[in-house]
Image (cartoon, rainbow, N blue to C red; front, side, top):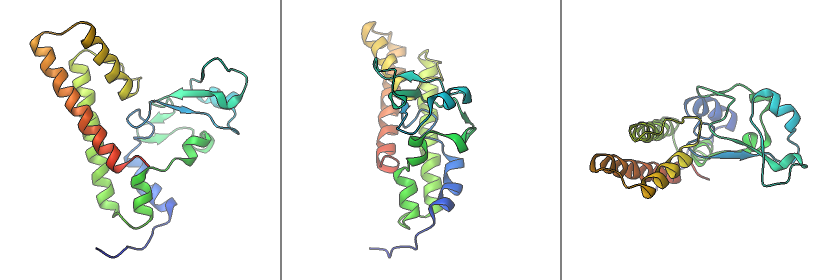
Length: 183
């Protein structure tokens, strides 16, 4: 068993990894973000977050969510970083934690991010190939919608072949994310 490396301050790890990643904001890891107690919906909405109530409880501030990909995401950077919701402030993916704890080298983490982004790009490309071009919707929701469409109206052989490749690509991406990013 290799010796544990020295831990790295979380702020340093965030500065190295997050600007290369943004998987927690771009709709790859999550489909939405729920506001938490202390989040002020009246301040977040003007910053460009399209808030919607969860269920039919519109009175409490923490009963709102906003969809992923985040409207405040610009490339891999958050336009509202200083004012971002609590859930965004609190989230640390497993890869980030592993690097901070000294269990994973920064270069290995950057490679894992590149692989995840490449796999997500492949899923995006296959979704476009089967006719889903709605990039404002989280990847999981786009795949579920496409799957329902294919189940409701069986496709011709060529489109079925692309859907098969899409299904495998989604599975491959999810396995990678589960192993590297989910806490």
